[in-house]
Structures are given as structure tokens and as C-alpha cells.
Image (cartoon, rainbow, N blue to C red; front, top):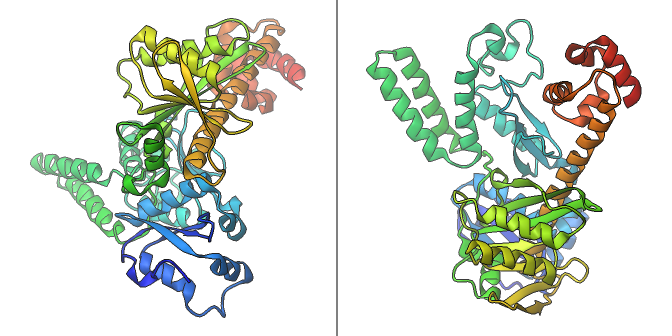
Length: 471
């Protein structure tokens, strides 16, 4: 017998979490209408496949998070799947479908593309989204309101997309880089879920254009506003979540477990990556309201010499807390145990900012909590069940911090290795090194570049020597 009645669910967008008799989350889904979607599982089963029938047989209870729009539901579903890794999500969904939107604002005319895996290349990434089909369809609708470029290399004359109004036409000099980036700024606001900000800006620009009697420009802003209103009736993805945090089991549980004064809206996590003390770096990642906030991620090049993780933690925490402009975290998570926490607390005392901090030890996944933050420190060790929503959230944050730090370490080490290679080529000095990295953006792209491409930067003779060494 189910512990819930689908007919009692709200008729609003949201995310639902099916549980088994052990109270384990076995499936997470999104819905435009929660009541209708959940009821559909318990109707006629003739058309269902065997895996879905197995899922239904295991369902004993459900939780749901009611949301304001499908936008929020679509993003939150993906984040919760990554956090809890429910059994049936990975059996029923193809992981290859996960997709990100990539926008590199450093280019003169930034392109928008779709990728399966983000890399730390200074571009902005939005996602992940579960369905490649849905995100492409949604972006096509957005492109009618905010035209954008998809060409990696601009064509010599106006493309078909320009002719039908989907591309702003930089190849035809129909728009400047500055004006194009203003359009992208509004698109990014939308992807971040800040529709109100776009509407306010468009209304302001429309009034200014009308006051200057630029009626054609004012009409363009009016059409964008109308397009945005029509989108509210369609499925569009966002990169921010605004659900009721009081219903997030992990955040509420974490607050109660650690006796925090309020829900941990901002959690910062740190990890150190080095190879026997060389090329040492640190990564700081931020989860806002339980989901990654990639705009807030930071990287640190470690100045501390030698293989001393504790000293490195002291350096990074001190440098972070000395930055006055950064918002204060509600909780700090370090990848490690008592030594790493003690080092971080030392820096807190030196800077005069004492903040809640915990560690997550890898092997036994124990949570290390300072009993108090006064010196000398004493610790409490908490062991949660593997199915605990709190542990799932902390593991998700810890693993993301590790991924971010190690990616930066590999990038730094590769650049240093390339510098050593470049030093062995006669005539290539610091200026050429800088020009090569500026032109190609990464060590990997320099390695695969052709002689002709390298020659444009350093000349044919040096390009041949460099290519021979790289190969």
C-alpha cells in the first residue's frame, strides 16, 4: 500500500522523488503538472516496458518539491539525479543525453554550442540538462528572440540563419561585437533564471528608444518582450533553482546535524592538488542552495613550497578570507580530516573570521566536525548511512571540488611541461610562449596545431622545429 495519494498532489510544476520500503530514493523525475505526471505511473500498464514495471512495483512512498516553473524543474531534476544517483534513473535514462550550453564571452563574436562535458577553459557553461533533444528545441525558440552565432569560423557572406533572423549577421557587418554581447547578456540572464531583470532592462531600452524617436529600435525591444511572454508557456531551461529550501532534506538535515544558525545557502569546498609538492594548486567551488554555482568557482596557484598539504590549506583559506568583496560562506567543506581542518581554522583565527567548517574523509566517508572552534581543537566524528541525503550532498560537493582542483593541476603542469619544450627551441622566448598560449588557448590545441597555424605566430622555421619536438 502506498503512503501517498497521487490525487492529493498539486497541479503545478515540480520534481518528484519515488522511494522504496527502505526509504531509499529510487527514481527522480520532473513534471509540468505533478499530479498528472505521478498519476500516469499508476494507470494502464500495458504500454510500459519491463524496467518501468519493476520501478512501479518498488514504489512505497514519494517526496515532491513544488516549483514556480518547468524551467526550475528541468534543472533541479538533473542536479538531484547527480546527487542521489537513484537506481532507476541510470537504468531508464541514457547518460549520453546529458548536455551543457557553452558560451565563450572572450571571443569577439562568441558562439553558442552544445557539449557533453565542460572543461576549465574560461567559457561559461550552463547545465547539465538531461535531454539533448529538449535543450536544442528550447534554444531554438530562444534564438528567435535573442539571435546568436553558431559558426566556429564566420562565413564570407550572410548565412541562411541570418536571412531568417536567427543569426545577427556579424559576417555582413550587420552588428558590432559590443551590440552582439549585449544580446548575449540578456540570453545569459534568461539561462540563469533572471527573467524579471531582462524584462525591466528591455522596457527601459524601449522607452529610451521611443523618447529619441528611434521607433524601429523601440519596436525590436517590444517584439523581444512579446517573445519572452510567449516563452512562459513553453518548456525552457534555466541554470538557477529557486525552490523552497525547507523541503530539501539534505540542507535541512545538514543544518540540524551541525546546529547551524540557518540553512547553509552558500557552501564553499576546497581541495588541494599537487605532484610531490610541484605545480601545487587549489580549487574553491561553491554550491548555492544545494546546486553548483560555477560563476563563483575560484582557482589558486599555491605559493607554499614543498609537499605540505596542511600549510597549503592554511595559505588558501587565508587568501580567501582576506578578500573583503566575497560573500561569507554559511559552511566550509574541506577534502580531508583533522589536519586539514586544523590548518584552515589556524588561518581563520589569524584573519579574525571564524566560520563553520567540516571535513569529509574519503575512505570511510566520515564527517569530521570540530566540537568547537576555539584552540586547541577537539573533534566529533559522524558516520552516516550511505543512503543519507546529507552524505550524498557532501559527497557531491567534495567530488566536484576534487574534479575542479585536479583539472587545474593538470592544466598547470601541462603548461609548465610545454614551457620546458619551448625553451629547447632556439629563438622561442617568453613573448612567443605568451603569443602561442594566447592564440590557441590551451596546451592541447598547440600540440594538435598544424605547422601552418604555428607559423602564423612564430614563423615557419621555428614552427617546423617546434612541431618536430612536440610530435
